[in-house]
Image (cartoon, rainbow, N blue to C red; front, side, top):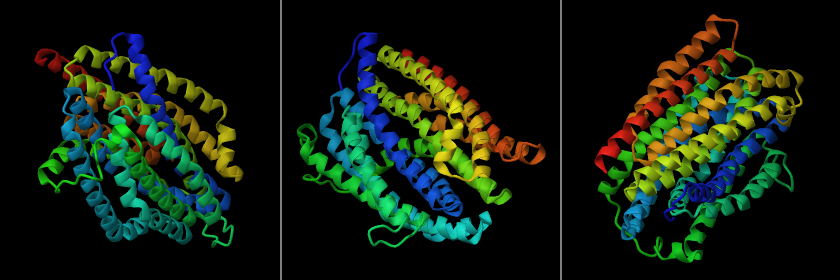
Length: 451
């Protein structure tokens, strides 16, 4: 990281940090897309089972990942202040915390997953596939959480290409493992959608191994001696990270969970074809969301660095650059999605009924892209300021106080059916974007008077 002076220099630095993050995020999500697409080729029931499993897993992953994401602004601000000597201790404490969080997810799955699946009222085979898909995936929870800590450590220093390279290596391995485990190739059992879970879990171990290797391989990273110098676990350090990370994680969780909750309601109220079409559209739309999400993560890095150095004007300039670029790019992507929605639907299934339903869902997905892009990038800026508590409240009210209730009413009291839920999502995301924009204006005013 370095301080860029002119607007053109800032755009260049922001782009250099952004594009590896974007490729990394797309690669991470591509694993889920591959799971869903290849499971769909195994059958509509497999597609529905993996869809339900993925929808239950997504908010858990993003929520806990949000807690660990606190590593980025913490490290970036330490760098901006010139306190490099404190970085190793902070990263190691975050690694300890990541293992604890992974174990908590294991316990929650053991106690609550059977009841959740039973409540959803799924067909027996769909429920079986969803359960065992998640069991297979769970073998990689500890390495996944730990590798994410290392990723945020790399990213905070501007070394965003490290994780990009790791994911580009891991992605084809994940696709190959999906192929042999879903369809039973090279002597392996034919597991259908369940095989996708085991393939992903194994891939998480590979990603972790490569991440640890990079801490020894890259000279500037090796100087921190992460796995050579050990510190005792510190409750004080965990408390500090959780004070920032917990509101961040909950904010992200409440956004991601509305999609999972909608899938749960759709699963209870509509047919397997509707479930499959809903998930196909949501799965691909989420892939597009990796663009503003990546821009949000890059914004957190550059804004936190400038705030740590006491340069409010530069932080505000980065904010404008990132938010404007995000809205322009997602607008173009939404137009392309509209024209190619039929071809995209066929990537998931050959079932004509499912394809027609998915095409309709894609139309609604287009409308929420802009609100989603706006709220994501605004949150990224706020994280750079290490502001998380108020954004968490805004997210909770917007997503669960407004979005879900309005969607449920539209789905049950009008002829919109499952599409009513998507309109509710649009309403919730729009309210969140407005709330985050107001919060950012207030934060900028406060910092202007304090610096």
